[in-house]
Each structure stands twice: as structure tokens, then as C-alpha cells.
Length: 280
Ligand code: C2E
Ligand code: MG
Ligand code: MG
Ligand code: MG
Image (cartoon, rainbow, N blue to C red):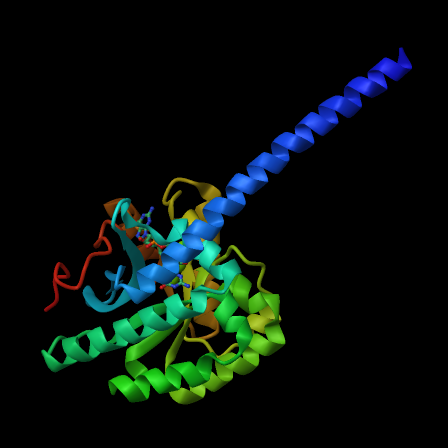
């Protein structure tokens, strides 16, 4: 009896393993395909940048835009970053993608400025992978030189978790970036366990409150408490706060009442191509 139970366990274990193995192979195959596809996309001009308005609550105007990458796939259509950035990050392709987006967004900003639009800055996301390599400041300074964009017209968004992965290195890199004159924002704030002592020393200008906390406003008591606390914390350190993911008028009204500085979200404007973006 014991023997037969053991045998069953073993055989189902092996069976399970074989199945797992097959899944792994399929996963690996798709991953290799995706990586090759991304390389092709960069070389053949299939990447696009969409721009989403960043709105100032005081004075009610668009002060900047966030650049968000998309992949115009010949078969799959417009692919959102969530479907390829994670694989790009652990395969190393992210460096090439982020470099492409950075240069593209800076060139677009130069064009907008030349046309007399009053945007103050374009915000570009930087992957934690690139961030942890520490050479970002050199790349940024090359792109600013090549495009002629003033450093103050570029904002870099780094996630809270990227900073907290290796706070000492992050701090040094952020200081070098700040010395170049670019603006710095902590993205997805509230999701990454910042040490407050550390946060206080970071040379950043802005916290972007993660959209998961904005989602429950104004009725969810926890979200309301967190939003209020992050705004107070930021202001006490002379930082600005932007709330992400604003989808309804009542959220906007509440954020205004709580003293939030900036907002971003579908209610204000979705990410769109540069042709579709309405600028003044
Ligand atoms: P993120 O930097 O936090 O960007 C904000 C995301 O929230 C965008 O998703 C935007 O479309 C979405 N969003 C904006 N307003 C609303 C709203 O009202 N409701 C909801 N539900 N969502 C809203 P997207 O474009 O799919 O990008 C997802 C993430 O991919 C970004 O999050 C960022 O982490 C990453 N990403 C995008 N572009 C790049 C890039 O060029 N480089 C790197 N490394 N990461 C990028
Ligand atoms: Mg961002
Ligand atoms: Mg964000
Ligand atoms: Mg986010």
C-alpha cells in the first residue's frame, strides 16, 4: 500500500514535471521570438511614442507631457509597453528601447519649442535596469547635446523600487543627473517601501503618487489617508506631487482640495501620438 502510494506520487510528480517542462519550453520559445521581434522593431522603425498631458492644478494648464512607448506591430497592432517592457528588461533590450525613446522625445520637444508651444518639459521613463547600470548621466548628456534641448526641458522618471534597490548608487547617479540640470521624478510612489531618511536626501523634484491610491478617491478611507499623507510628506520636503490615473471629475476635485500640485489621467487626456496631441 505504502509502496503503491509512493509510486503514484512519483509518477504524478514526474508527469507534473514533464508538463512543467513543456510549458517552460513554450515560454522560452515565445520569449526568444519576442526578443527577436523587439530587435526588428527598433531597426525597422516600429516603435512609437505617445504623449500624455501632465496638468497643473494651479492655473489649470498643461505644463508637460509624459512620453510612453508603444510597439506598432505588423500583425498585433499597437502593443502596450506592459506586454514587452518586462521581457526587454530582463533580456537587456531595454537599453536600446529607452535610448530610442529618450532621443525621440527630446527631438519632439525641440520641435514643439521651435513652434512656440508653451510646454515646460517632456518626461521620459527610465528602466531600473538602465538606472542601475550607472551610465545614464553620460547618455542623457549626449542626447541633450545632440538634440540641443535645454536640460531643464527634460524630466526623468525613475520608479521608487529602482531607487530603493541600491539607494547609495541611485543617490550618486541622481546627483550627477541633477548636476546636468534635468528634472527628476519618482514614479509609482507608494509602491516601493522608501525609507523616509533616504527620501529626504534624494535630489528629486517631484513624487508621482501611484494610480492605485488615486483609484479609490474620494470614498476609500485608506486611499484618502495615503494620498493626504503623501501630499503632506512631499510638501514638507519641498517636493511637488503629481497624482496618476485620474479618471473622474470627483477625483480631480478632491485632489485639488487636498493641495495636490499636478494631475495626469484619462479624465484630463489619454496618451496620444504627437499629431493628435492638442497643444496651445
Ligand atoms: P507609468 O510610467 O506609471 O505610466 C503611466 C501609465 O498609466 C501609462 O500606461 C498610462 O497610459 C497609464 N494611465 C494614464 N492615465 C491613466 C488613467 O486615468 N487610468 C489608467 N487606468 N491608466 C492610466 P502605459 O503607457 O501602458 O505604460 C505602462 C508602464 O510602462 C509605464 O508606467 C512605465 O512604467 C512603462 N513604460 C512606458 N514607456 C516606457 C519607456 O519608454 N521606457 C520604460 N523603461 N518604461 C516605459
Ligand atoms: Mg512614468
Ligand atoms: Mg507612473
Ligand atoms: Mg504607474
